[in-house]
Length: 378
Image (cartoon, rainbow, N blue to C red; front, side):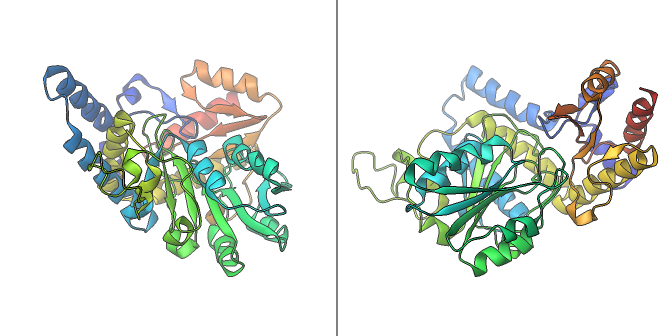
């Protein structure tokens, strides 16, 4: 991105005028003025008379799904909205037809949202295989080595929430497709910063919340699933909007929709939809690929600066293909450093002994330099 584009992007985030350096997008992203304007208008309409704005909501839903489909290289009818990442993964876990002895591969550094929905299947006789991490990393090769004849599903984060390691989904997806194993992806630490090509990577299922890198609201998420996978799973929860001809209210013709919309049983999170719609339009304005390049450029620059300062970086020697928006380091005084930086209005996170930084596309090398200086000064 050129300087003018960065300046324009930064103009959408007024908190920057207060001198705050926000490197915590892996936890919760800030809301842009684009989002605020659309939500303010929604509230004003509902306050002043345009109360039943269902047609506008339908339009926002359609637009948002089209933009997500563009990001994922799929079609909008393969996307359904959910409440969060966990609810999406539960749609998959509870919808599949399991038999005793089926196996699922997870790993020992997954965020719990991508663990408990599958552990919950153990009462059905499903076995869980946890791949052990090495130096805070789980690679595609590590997971592939764990595949057994009974393996039915692999669920993995695109970007690991502690280290920021981006797994080789294409390698994992290609082999999974060959072996007829379902590949499910928790994408919340990737999408918005790093794109996923579901066709190229052969991903069967994605669940993702919108409150982090997508710069949307909490309590809003979505799933993607292939038509082939949809035909293999049941809709465990259905409602009036799950069926064809939903507006024939007293027909009670139980025929589920043929699109992913069958997994949207009723009223959506309208504020979440409006926020996501505005945010995705902003992303599209700059270009999804452009944003990814800028995020990776920031991460590479950050890693180089921290390496020169001899900090204990998790991804110091990894290829660019394994980098994401997260830059993490190990430090015995992680909690104290976090508190020190907070006093300087530098916002990051501490997770399991990691000091985790997560700058977005609109953050600058100048901000990164300041963070490195303060780390060295500690």
